[in-house]
Amino acid sequence: MKYKVLILGNNKNLINQFFDNMGQRLECVNSSDRFGDIMNHIKYIQPDAFVLCLNGENFDAIKKLTNVMNELSRKKIPVFVIGDNRECSQFEKTITSVKVNIIDKALIYRIIEEKIVRALEDSRRLGSRKETADMAAQIKADAADAVKEAEKMISKIEDEEAGRRKHILVVDDDSSVLKLIKSYLSGNYDVATAKSGKVALKFLETKKTDLVLLDYEMPGEKGPEVLSKIRADARTKNLPVVFLTGVTDKEKIQDVLSMKPQGYLLKPIDMMKLSSTIKNVLS
Image (cartoon, rainbow, N blue to C red):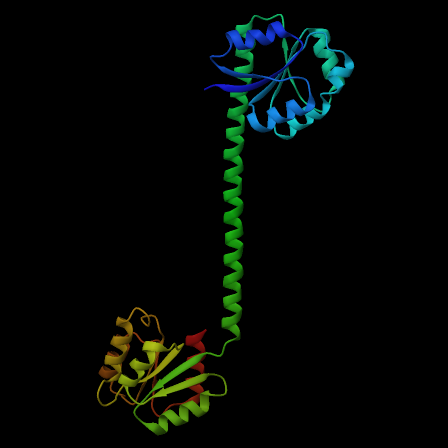
C-alpha cells in the first residue's frame, strides 16, 4: 500500500527525491511553510506522516512549527525530521512536546524511504494490536457490566418475590372444605378456590399460582387426572401440588405417591399440619 506523506522544508533537492524516486511506496504532497497551508493540508489530505526536510532553518523558523507539531501529535500523525546532526539536534531542543523520528539526510533516498515505510508499518501494526486489545478490554468490561445488571435485576426480582404474598389454589368439590381452608390460609396467603378439576385447569391457563392443594377424589376429573394434565403443560409442569385425600388404603396411598406430588394430607385436614406442609413446599 502507499502511505500519504506531507512534506515541508528548505531542502528542495531532498524534496525532489521524494517526488522523483519514492512515489512507488509514498504518495507525496508538498506544502508551503505558511501555517494556514499546512493546517489545511493536514485537515483535507489526512496524511499518514509528516516529513520535515531541514536545510539550514534557523531557530525562529523551527519555533513557528510548534503549533503544527502539536496538531500532528493530537491527531497521532508520525513526524519524520530529516537533516544533519546539528539541524536535528536544534529541532529536538526547540520542539520538545512531540516525539519525532530522526533520519540522517546523508543517507541515499532508498534507505530514507525504507526507514519511513518501515516505521509506518510498525506503527500500524502496533495500532492494530492496541485496537484489538482495547476491543477485547471493552468486550470484557461490557460483559462485566451486563453481569452486574443481570445480578441487579435478579436481586430486584428476588426482593419483589420475597415481598409478594404467595398464592395458593385450592381444588375440592366440597364447598365447606374450600371455605374452611380459604378462611384459615387467607391471613398469610392469597387464596383462590375451584370446585372441580376442569375449573382449576381453566384457571391455570391464564393465571399463576405458587401451590395447588388438590382433592384426590372428585366427580368428573379426579385429582390424578388433573395432576397429569398439570405436568403435561410446559407452563405448569414444575408447579408444586399437594394432594388432599380421605383415602386411607395403603395401596391407594402408594398410587397417590406414585404421582410424585410435593406432599399429601389426609382428611379431615389438620390445619397445623397443612400450614407446616405449605411452608416446607414454598420454601
